[in-house]
Amino acid sequence: METFWSLAGMAGAAFVAATLLPAQSEAVFLGLLAARTVDPLLLFIVASLANTAGSVVNWWLGRLIARHGVEKLPRRLRPDPRRLAQAQGWFARFGWPSLLFAWLPIGGDPLTFVAGTLNYPLGRFILLVLAGKAARYGVLLAGWVSLT
Image (cartoon, rainbow, N blue to C red; front, side, top):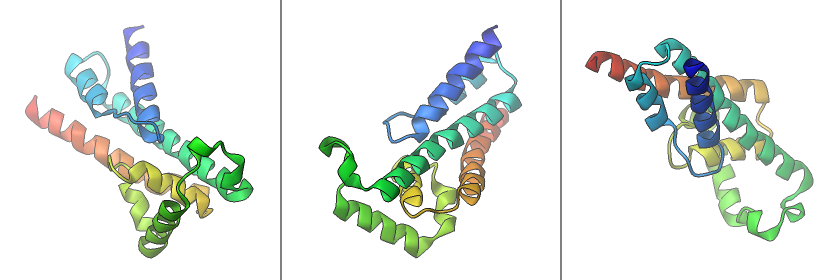
């Protein structure tokens, strides 16, 4: 039962950390590795998939705004049109490889939102974001393994 709750906590932390809400999951990941209550490979898989799922929420929100317009949102939730256009220009300039960096603490989450506003294909989006996020958790796992 402890494994279930550990993995559920990891999934929740990783999911929320990938949305536009301020959070991070690396400390939870490393803490659970240090506690040795969960298989490290299973922890890696859960963290990578849940973090990617959170990014899909951002993509979906961006897609909704592109489809229905920002006017439908309450004022306090509307993105600044100037900053949104700037982010869309940045994504258009650097293209799909930028999604490999969706794990970055600053700019990564908004990048996934912008991909949705530009109707970037969801299947490719998931593959690219998953690759980047899995690589990040893989580096954390490899560092932990090398220290133990």
